[in-house]
Amino acid sequence: MTTPTVDVQQLRKAFGPTEVLHDVTFTVHEGEVFGILGPNGAGKTTTIECIVGAQRPTGGSVRVLSRTPHLDRGALRQLVGYQLQASVLPNALRVREVLEVFARLYRTPRDVSELMEETGLTSLARRFVGTLSGGQRQRLSTALALVGSPRVVVLDELTTGLDPQARLAMWELVERVRAGGITVLLVTHALDEVERLCDRVTVVLDGRTIFTGTPQEMRRLAASGSDERGSLQDAYVQLIERRGAVAEMGRK
Image (cartoon, rainbow, N blue to C red; front, side, top):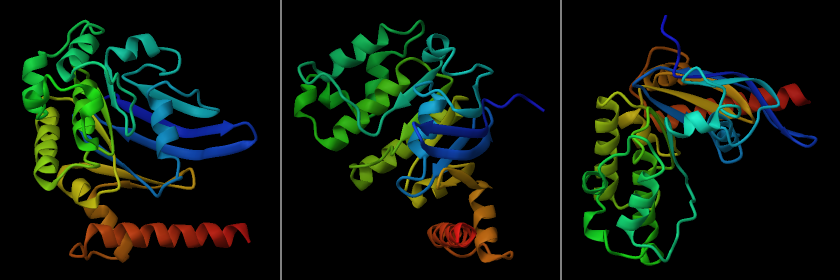
């Protein structure tokens, strides 16, 4: 068995007396597109923050490329790209300038012109960041996650604010990224995105992992049988509702 690219085991995280992660466990293998799903407030963002080293776990373990993120942030910064759902970018710089500045932070950066072409930013190269729409900022944030030639990239709500044509272009970009051997962690609420891109997914509910497997396995589990014809969205909703009901009964 090869060492997982990302290995999260019984992850716990508390902020003061409040524990937001109780038991998050999953592994991600090299070259996978791995989806992280769950309702708002389930613990997805905190899990990602532990994976990229922005938070120190209270318990359990996280390993990324055989390193401990909160202890090896310097090394992992060169190896892991992170596209934030809501990022703060310098409004007074132009799009190309931002990419060039960030590229200088890495030992083996991508060619900026090539990356702008891939992410649909070429026509925006001279635009000031402060004038970009939400969708355009999202594309720039994605390009910044890729500019360092990462081995792992975390994409948080990749296509939020994008029109259908731009969404398709971003999906195709993710497929090219995977073809290049990069491991992708995709945090999303879009089940059509999961259907198109993800090899496997994990579902987090109330700070716990309640499912890890392929989209087809999620359908089978939700249907309690072998029927895979239902929509993935229906299967996901059923899974959340069933596990939520079981957890509520356990608290009574």
